[in-house]
Image (cartoon, rainbow, N blue to C red; front, side):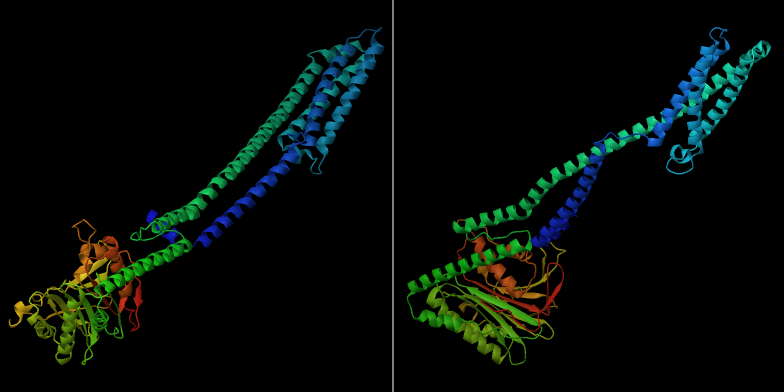
Length: 562
């Protein structure tokens, strides 16, 4: 999953990344703005002492407390009134009446509270159902207590000592008072419990608000380093890597490819820099070749080079092609290649490598090329063409050549070939299931010895073999200068494995991409200076496969050759 995510992020454009990051920041800022606005409103509300109970509930609790206190005062005044003598009777009477007057006002207020039905002041709406039930019991008990003390007061006023004594037996007034006082205490306890609950809820909300404020501050603090990290990862780090690679190129390291996994915009800059690096290498190689050509100092060189130049690659419906030749010394190579259309509709791919370098090797190469062309037009059989071409070496006892002739039927994909000691051409296919991503389908192994004077009169020295190319496969013909590339002072050669490993990194295995990458990996591996001529011809039938397994069709066009 990590590799999939990395691949997805690598292909995501920098503009899209920045847009996503900006949109995410906008959403976060909006959320934070709403949270902060809410916190400001809450702070404004909290700037004043917040009640933990409703206005009615607070007043009701006060009235209950006052009623309880006045009940005690009235009970005390009543007891003093009942037990007063003649001398103190007027004063006790006045005290009792004043205490009962306050008691009656408090009771009337509670009766009014119980009878309210209009929200939000209605008791049932504000205090639930338990408090009203308790209040009704209290008021009923209050009426009973008042009735008992009023009866006793009547006996006292009429000086009915017998009736007063009878009303005091078993202390009915005290019992009624105790019951009423207990009910009031229970009502106050219920109200206190409600207030305690409100206080806990208020503290919980306040703590929750503080947690929200802490969370907002934490998110705000995390957003800044996150933004800096993303900018560093997506922009600063890739640009720093690209800068380091360009500095190395500026310091003379032209063999290390410039690559930058990252946003497509920066990857495009790296690709342009890599194109520039390759162009510099090509220009440098051309300059070195031109200087060595001047050293060769023969006007014949240009003519030999022109004679060895390949024909234009044929345009064959359903096929694509590319080719290149890079001489090791000067402008004249001992290698040469050609792709020849044949009279019967087939075409022949010929690649040869004459031993030695310079003008003499070039002249031998011209003779070999002309004989092969003539032989293939007379009888397009690879083994017969090689047998005829070998006569070039009748007067060249010190020279030899490797050569391969491949005759391709574009309709069926059938390949007939003869190989005179040449590195085996390869039929390749893209296959991500194998190591490296490129599979060798067929190797066109040698079918006879090198072309030399040793085998001029030996019948059947070379024979023809047959292979086939399925749609989507590529034929690659090359000289040993490709696989024998090696660094200065080392005997370790690049080999076909090194070439295939480099080809496996290509997103699309086309003939032109194959030729460019193979030449580039050989140049890098040898330190920028080829020690032997390198020739490459690549043909593709039908379609080629990308690394993602997507076919890329070629509608009968061919790639330009170098």
